[in-house]
Amino acid sequence: MIRFFPLIFVILWSSAFITTKPITDNSDPFSALAFRFLLVAFGFFVYAVYKKEKIIVKNKFLFEALSTGILFHGIYLGGVFFSVSKGLPTGVVALIVTLQPILTNILATPILNEKISLKQWIGVILGFLGAFLVLGFDIGTSLPIIGVLSAFIALISVTSATLWQKKLSNNLPLSVSNMYQAIGGCLFNILLIFTIGKPFINFSSTFLIAISHQIFLISFGAFTILMYMIKRNSASKTVTLFFLVPPTTALMAFLFLNEKLNYIDLFGFLIVSIGVFIATRGGE
Image (cartoon, rainbow, N blue to C red):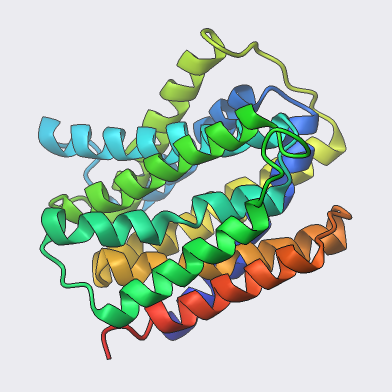
């Protein structure tokens, strides 16, 4: 089962971008995220109690988990949800934040002392070129500038979160760590609601189905798999999986959201896919 984690992760993580659209159509992005992670935190709390895990932890571990949650669930997902709410196509959002391996490979050497091979560099460069082809010259015309900027903020945040998580002691049980990360994300999004957003959720059937998907399949499923893979593998190797997310998301967006791509976009996604193929074999 564990060997299928990368495939399961890519499918689940890609599907999260698709359900973000109906969520932001029915709510303020930060209200939706605060609601989501309130329920996620409660779910992990119940599970931790059931497993008799120690809930009260040292201040150091508490700070580490809360800060990771703010980066992952607050700034990263806040940027993704906000960009989609401003009209940036979900496939483009996925592509921007999937440039993460480029930043991770650049920073993994000085921060984590991980050696990055020449093949890995070739892979991430191809990924960057593919992303450039998709973005092209549409920024400011068909692609909203504020949406693109918020997606790049999300990119920086998820890169920082991955490196930070890998550098941490990881002494907490996964359920307890995820609980405090969810609390950090919830509190940060509540702060955003009362600073740059406004409280609003339309509890329609569409919203409830989409948010349930993100709570159970993404927060409890994909995110737990991600934390497991970061702990077991190098940061640079783990995040190269994200290069498979844009083409998967683009296909899902075409099927479920009627988002269309031109030939240049398709070529760009193809180059990104080739980049991940090379990058994931960079250490061989």
